[in-house]
Image (cartoon, rainbow, N blue to C red; front, top):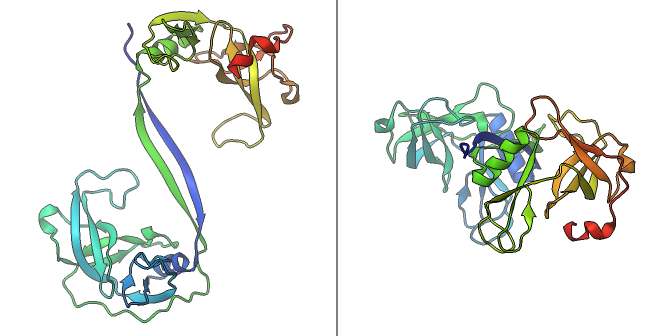
Amino acid sequence: MPDVLKAPLVVEFPFTRSLGPVQSAFLTGLRDRVVLGVRTTDGRTLVPPVEYDPVTAEEIRDLVEVAPTGTVTTWAWNHAPRRGQPLATPFAWVLVRLDGADTALLHALDAPGPDAVRTGMRVRVRWAAERSGAITDIACFEPYDGEPAQPGGHRGDFADPVTGIVAPARLDYTYTPGRAQTAHLDALAQRRIVGERCPSCRKVYVPPRGACPTCGVATSERVEVGPRGTVTTFCIVNIKARGLDIEVPYVYAHIALDGADLALHGRIGGIPYDRVRMGLRVEPVWTEGARHPDHYRPTGEPDADYDTYRELL
């Protein structure tokens, strides 16, 4: 049996959100080197600010400036920073209660090593050289042995407030397809399509999963299917995906390969998008060096009868 495959994969997208009046003031303040909190009706000052009191759930809007100096309440050493974290060299994650605040703010502390960090140590904000209205406008915290800074009494009124942010979301992981799908992928590299048959219900699953989803028993008998198949259902894609060199509109379809009991998905080409239909007979089109079909095209055969694929919709 060939070695089980594995590959590094990345899921990444920008998350865009609008800001309410409290978060807008907080981030705009960071852009202008001002740290704002919000005061509750019982006199507590929350930093970072929230729009609703976590104790009473009442809406709170009373913004108040706090100092850029504070005290570490707890910490953890990060010996191997990852991509996108505040500092490229080892640092401490710290919770800092800024002077004038009653809650702590999570951020990075630039320190030479874990022996230089302790609960109760005094720190101050190190501002980023370029600021845009984001939490990264605080580059990090740094040790500080001076007097507490005095806030200027800012109330959160800005001429050009930040109204929205774009936060990148990214997940790096290693994908291992397992024994069954490794065999399937190896067969695709040879321009063959292989699934596995359940020993109980005798259904053939493509791509194989290593176990029958209906019976729950392991599958090991390999069965070559297709390569031709039938479009069971489809959708027309009208929005171009970033990094995908395919002109819209195009069609993505579920395709029941001959001999398979599960429809797989693939792009339909070689036919105008508005002529794709259920029952269309198709075959794979391979490109040089590819490990999987680039798309499926019509075979020219008569359409399949609905009764032959209705169970695969």
